[in-house]
Length: 305
Image 1: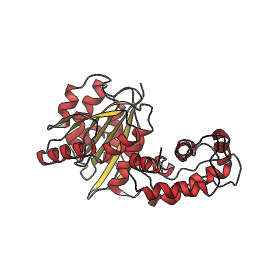
Image 2: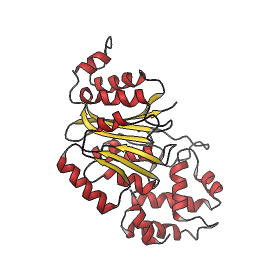
Image 3: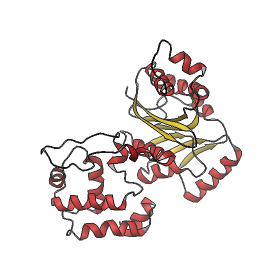
Image 4: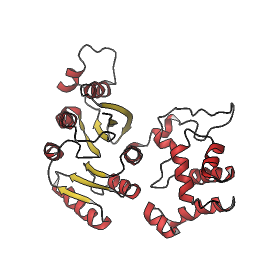
């Protein structure tokens, strides 16, 4: 791929691509046909489990070139389409290395790193889909007018298509404009509630679900109940759900938290976890608290069987 093609695919300025390539070139030519993208993708997929020398050996390149790829990624800070390990791993996780005392790449993720609000929550949703077991098929989504999450997923995994729903008429027409402008692979765009799509869905119909509700659990748990009971997501697929944690005294929460004590400030989180456990074949794999004008939570659920 040319520099222009890489920049267009990742939807980043050309200067970011040239900067990354330049940093690698200063360390020498990349051997064995490994491109900048090859090395960076390998680092992002394996860096949490392998030391730099192990990655270099697996790629068939000198260790300095792996170090250069890591340095380039860190300097660029964020390149759409690549997700740094600090975006993927839970916070405060230490990566163990074989050599004692050796500094691991991305060894610690600070508490403050996670405090990035809605934008960071979206990055997590994209990363969980992109790095999941299923990399093609249909995704059901509740998108923003600019289809931010869907655009990023499509750029990283172009074999997905989307069924989307938006009840608000103004947002719906803005979404149509975005779809036309960005040429997004939307199989269907419906001016209705997401529950309508869920009710019509069949078993194993979708690879993943992006349910960016931002509402409280009391108003969405019936939708989720249908999702889990009907098994509309394939085994290995993820269900991303966002909801407000501002209200914690609803009928749903009180019902789920019978006999629970000492969970002050965690009612929504614990209630959701207990709710998921009612359904065979699903488990919560990631949780992230953030603010979007009000306290919010993102929970990622995976279908495991």
